[in-house]
Length: 395
Image 1: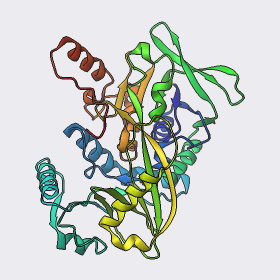
Image 2: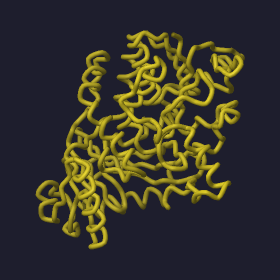
Image 3: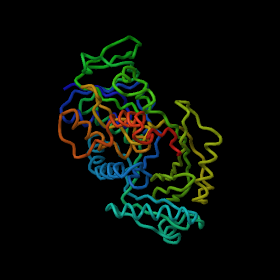
Image 4: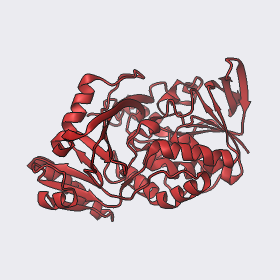
């Protein structure tokens, strides 16, 4: 079986490695230099299956299931690549400053415990015993001990090396500009190669894992994949370097989240901006992140501002990923992960292998099928249900 994977980010590389280990001949096509456009390279690496405010219970269960695969998955990748990816099951915490915020996180803890997941509501003093750097203004916190962190650039490099050893061919500087079809089946992609020359790359399956660039691939619209089905959401980040470690786990506050690294760095994020693929870190974006970080951990005031960057996360209308076969045979979709691409990488790879090899998945994929968007539009135009396409992620 020949498979072309479009996109060499974390999702694309994870899928490529899993497919190659299953016996497929895999080629990964990346439009720029390796990891240049990958949202995962710009991510904070939070394995926040429970920390994230999910759009549905199905999404929570998907993320928890994928997070549970991380210890074994990372161990295999580190052994194959020789690269340590700084995986830590350190837990996460969401803090509250007001009674209203406390009520909100208390309801979240109750809901997650009712679903069988480990979660705990702490008062301010208990939260500071776990994280002494927290401000005294914190009155409560939700603790999710099963969550963790990882270093995305290291993980991406480890996947590249492990994939290469498994036989994955990586071609960078190759832009996919269309699909090759034979009747109703997709049989490859049209590209401009490394030298700008047109070329057709044949395959039995094409996996679209191009993140926020997925909808820019021509020929997807006739298959029910509209150009605005996936839009880029810019996220600005800053990196602080502290002389001593201030935090032991990820802390999410109303103004920012803080993701500590074992070497003393603290990544602070993130904005969510619908500005297309406009790159750049703005003064207002950086200020809002710094204000948010210092409001929850004032001791970071002596940290050095070491770096800043932005990335583009793939946002769908309902904030759920697309993990499914397309309406045309030969095309698989693994995109639209938004803020959950890192935590969902191992399970996404499993799902794509199952779809490509005709295996039964352990996951109910109906909530994540691309066909849900066609159904939503049909219901809205027929007046049988409320509009479900929400474009503004802040709503």
